[in-house]
Length: 170
Image (cartoon, rainbow, N blue to C red; front, side):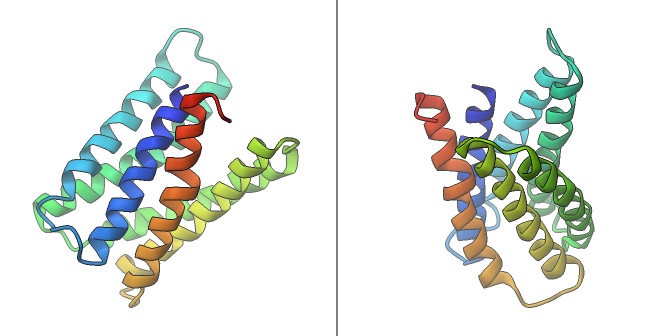
């Protein structure tokens, strides 16, 4: 159930960040959803890492969840501080590289539609974080395709699967 909760708001923040990158949401307003989604996924990660019954699998899930948490919190802080995002871009490269073996491991053992979806989602997230690296750290003009990718992934890897997990449909 925690995965559904986190994914639901990962979907929201990806969609809204994409809309922000397209100029549909202002710089002073976008930190709200980033703080909320980052804080929520941080709480989920802390529960997984330090809660009752924490084990190697839950700590691994927490570590991976923190990749999302830290990204969204960093976006929010950058908007408040006026930072240019280069540091976030380099962090995005770290995350993109980290997501590759996570995706490979997930796809290697996938045996159900949900497991295949998770492995393919890690592939998609790796590509999205790579696009953020190219755009923020290297200054490539990828705002529009990155925004569209964030919106699409928000729906397909976050909002819809999160909703289905919360309602028992997945």
